[in-house]
Length: 171
Ligand code: C2R
Image (cartoon, rainbow, N blue to C red; front, side, top):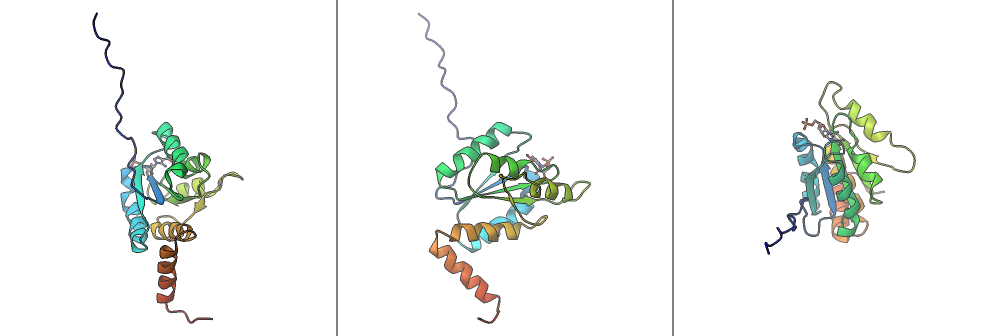
């Protein structure tokens, strides 16, 4: 009897997963890379382990939902959604996880990021997205580091040292 063709499917992971990552950065397109680089520079400065994926609530809705649903179980503590134009991505991530989600609107397009800002900041009550300014990848990185620092004394120490380096006098 002829052998049945194997029904085994590819087991290639569909996501880029980084061991011990605490921050999951998700961008809607590779064209957002420049903004993503601003986030990772800050996270690296504070020794925060991150992972990066390109997923889109519009173009790859199922993969986006799967990533968000599995994020907490894999040990991630915060997600950052980076998107321009009609930026549904951060809100969709937030709808599929109870992890805090930071939304980073990208500049570009005919409205230069104002469309993305409004899409991200105007979430319906109950599903919040902590929105930073248009193109402000640095603040997305700082905010994520502050969230990770709640449970990580090493990151907290680095944040305190950074604040001291700003030179304000102690109260
Ligand atoms: P392309 O350059 O790939 O055409 O993308 C991306 O974040 C990017 O800024 C143009 C812009 O479309 C955005 N995009 C979204 C989503 N997916 C892609 N806003 C989403 O799911 O919200």
